[in-house]
Length: 283
Image (cartoon, rainbow, N blue to C red; front, side, top):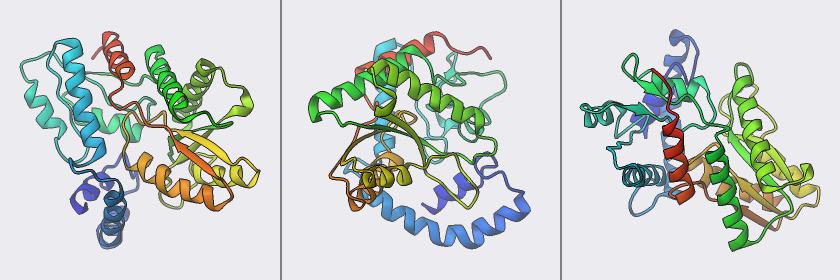
């Protein structure tokens, strides 16, 4: 955890503070306390095969390879397998990189393209791609068929600092609006929120946890939560929403909390990835 967090939090895209200010804080304070706290959270979602995010990403890559009939390699932005190792596997191929962040942000999307050779083709974003929206809708409908439907669907996206996050927020809202339209939801039946706040700056609002607490206090005893900005279930969906946010909702008076699984290995998502690649970006 310490190695992973050191790489992640030292990225200028993630924490854009002056290095002289941030690095002493990172190594003197953050990396002395946060690894243990993060490890406790990961322990709650870990599987016998390992990290859910790593497993889903590897499986998606294998299914996409079968779907397209071409070499496909997967990588993690931080940790292993690295982007460099994935590119090495594909060194004899014409490569297009797909950062699996549907909505564009410098802290996520550009942190990937920073690691690519100049001129390499990469998908900038796909927040409104019809196949992506259709895959999200199919995923929600599948959950409703299996678990029933709640009166309210909360769509929780990863948060960003409000300053500089305007384009990202617009794309998140656009995604949610398209999904709500695809599902035939009325305006009162869905909300957009932002999670994963870090630090003391003002982040994009409304915050997911606060919204869920208010929702329960308003008398809404059942809620569905989807995370359209995450294509794979991970710490932010399984622990932050599925465990911590659920607990807050129930403590505030809610009775039923349903976390809708991410796209993961659904056939609709693999098909959507293939379609997104068919309109790949130019270098």
